[in-house]
Length: 330
Image 1 (cartoon, rainbow, N blue to C red):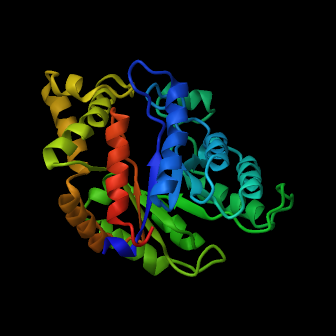
Image 2 (cartoon, rainbow, N blue to C red):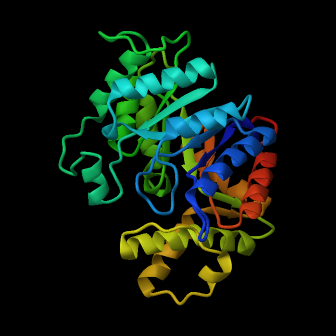
Image 3 (cartoon, rainbow, N blue to C red):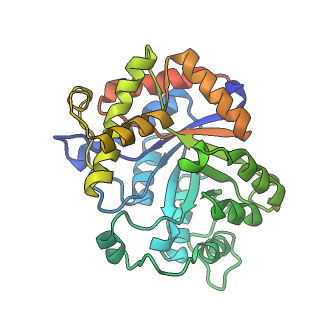
């Protein structure tokens, strides 16, 4: 079954303890180059503002660097958060990327606000602000396809594919707009994911963006020699989440040995165990079985792996092993 779906990567430019943000960004570019050699279909980057453990705050700028250093792989945003931007500006940025790298640019859009209240204030977004996402998305698309009262430049000869990063209401927005959808996080792990995606497919209105529904599932995947070895690789990200839940600050990744030796509170242990549990991890046989089960439950067309760990060598090895499992399609 894995050979019948596409495989892509989402990289959040995670920082490592003792390293600068610049190192994280350079390693994101290098990971994209490896992903292209391994046959991955897409390489997406994220938008996070003022988060200590994540260096990527401007997807279009990072995408330009990646696209300039690769030649085939599709490059995209996972995603641009529309509440933080004027739709015209987003359209101009991605029109420029498409003009420079034709046929290789994707625009994933989401609705999440800033990580903390100070960041939301800096972005001029209040938590009680009205939800403008559906309208912003519709306006953005008019600029991209030339239907707006003003023309976003450079003018496009081919459209930029738009994806909706969706949970809950976002699935309905995507369906009614006739757009592909990316689902991940708690909604993906819940029992209702099959029903939610069936509703998306039933509500889907064909558009110029695509004749039918298209589902991308995004989750952490780690491949190693054994389940135990892969679980250890998942610990740095899980620990960072536990710290964020405790202190409100999402930190840089720490070495596995340091995380494994920590004495955790009951709450921290619960967060770590839950985070590791949401990660598909193990050897090739174990990971393939879990991914195939997920594909059966969701009917997904593509897997977007969003994994990170402290050891970049182990991460590169995991990426290579995962790619080999999908090799006949990607």
